[in-house]
Length: 452
Image (cartoon, rainbow, N blue to C red; front, side, top):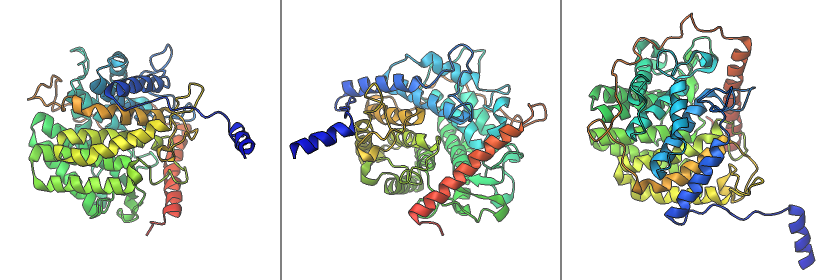
């Protein structure tokens, strides 16, 4: 029997021991530092001849679309804020400023072929985060973090972005020629809601909150969020948004739950406390089976796209920040996130270095599925464990230093004729992204059996 067991072990190959530990603050800091290093090894934008701000891509040039660069810098700002390690701050600042575009609104012309409201919004949320966490301000002649977030919000609040189809709401894509322009979805409207709630708190301007509440109401009224706080992907304008794609993705829950927490903080209204609690319950029910992050729509049958492989990190980061903005959530949420983080580091045993992270945290074993998103997920989960020793997001009345401009971006949100022509290849790329999302959702429905 012993010889049989030995033979099986040899045939299975070497088994790496777990490298990362999170059982003390010192170990969390050490683990986060190594994960940050490993994550930044995927980034080449600060190298000669490369484009600052973006991960390798977009397809077919590399795996990553423009928006994920914006998400990366939000993760790295959190890393600095939570650990105090400023190693990457200059790289982060360069990246966030390089991609602002000629109108300083995160609409650079070279990404028009796949520019969605959600893509622009991810960069805007990272700028908002930089203001809230007092990330070092740019030089005075450069765009400022708060003004950049306001510019994104203003372009998305423009009536041109909110047509009468489906009773209002943002479309997924911005240019009318893009595949996906006929689709309205939860993530685009969720980011707009999120940014509005945060700007209301930071600036103490109720207009942002009023628009945020109207956005929440529209999402509920159109059926993208149900009474149990399940959040569905979106629907097409041609059906008046009645063909709801019922796929659920964790970043939708994350963006709404953080926005709702900010609305609670700003208004102190009990209805927002109830909404936050409802979203917590829904999020844990769908995305944290056994208290471990799980991407329900795609992980079971591994139809996750490169985009979806990064979602776990956002739900960890945003729920963690929520516990500071709405402290009544901390006792319930933080133990679950700690358990999930433990599962995350347990499977980081792959690669030649013996610490490369995969995607399936709940499996307890490295699954070989690697990339920037997978590493970003684990870094987010680990660094978030330091939340209790970090400062609460500031406002302009509590120490915030970022300079704002309430008129930033106004009138600059249209895709004009002076932009470069969209090539057939660009359109094909955008079409592939749309098709992949639809096919992924279809596969998820077949597995989950939840379609109506």
